[in-house]
Length: 240
Image (cartoon, rainbow, N blue to C red; front, top):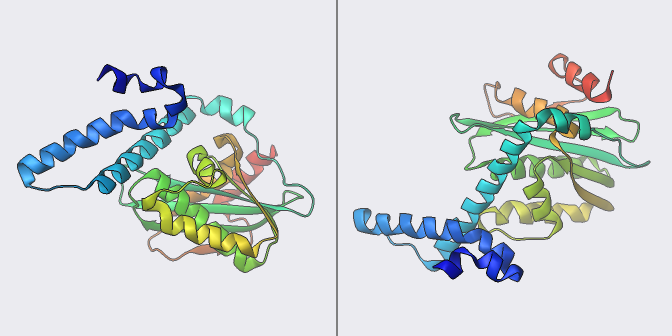
């Protein structure tokens, strides 16, 4: 047991696997209770899938807590920057509440002159965790950008776990359909980049996602003009 709990110290090369150890033990304990009290069994693949999902959700929550604690510093250090000439940048975000029944998706597209071109907002029935919501926001943005026929685009998010997932070409079984959908659409662009930004550089997309929680239906909404409820956020991000 000592070796298992100290795997990262004993074998530094197994750092990624060591992160999963606490969640594996927790999931085994939960499965034991399921077997004893509900006569339910889970196979090895199912257990490992859930362990990875638990670890990913915990990492996302940890990053969100860190962002909340350091929000002022991040707003100072994380500033939105325009893309290179001939490129556009699409910032995405999701609003997910543990005690709510909806999640909100938002994205904002701007050109190399910092001009807002399009804004997308929609509400969805609550997804399982923050990572799934962030991924769905990005997937929707990728689909829309491919339809708009933009060729050189940067997709930017404050969800570091999500950006790492895409840049490292990793695969999570529960996220596989959405990841495959995104990767299939990437062939329609000439050049694509996935980029992380601190929350301060993603404030407009964050505002759009939070506004989506107030929608009374699941119909997606597109804006080619900045709506009144978003104008202050856009001005603040530009320092106006």
